[in-house]
Image (tube, rainbow, N blue to C red):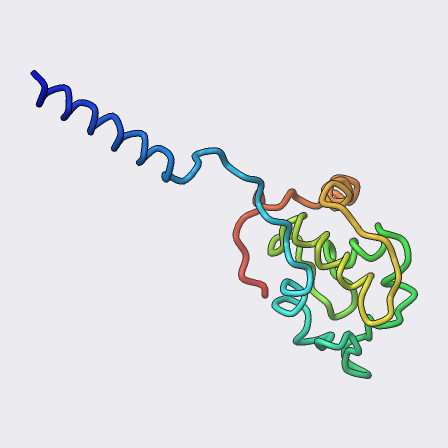
Length: 141
């Protein structure tokens, strides 16, 4: 009997120890997107890591009044394209787009406020651009 109680106690202690060291099942919120990393991945090939662009080919973002202007104007370029720049509406999520624009609007001497994921989503609706993830897959980039 004593051996049975001892074994039961050991099982209980082992179970409590395992529970205490197990990772929490509660989900923590996803980390905020890294605007700089996303810019470098998606934009720097044309606009350069310095934001200076390539004269005559790709406009500078550093010191740009357009970039630091109205939220809707600058976000529309990413959602619909402009000139030779393609739209990124199907390739970049609203959260990532807001992070990229926030980074660009506050880098290289630019001093403008942040954009939010909600603003980008609302602008999609205003412009009639499909919500991210609802359009068919494309291979345009």
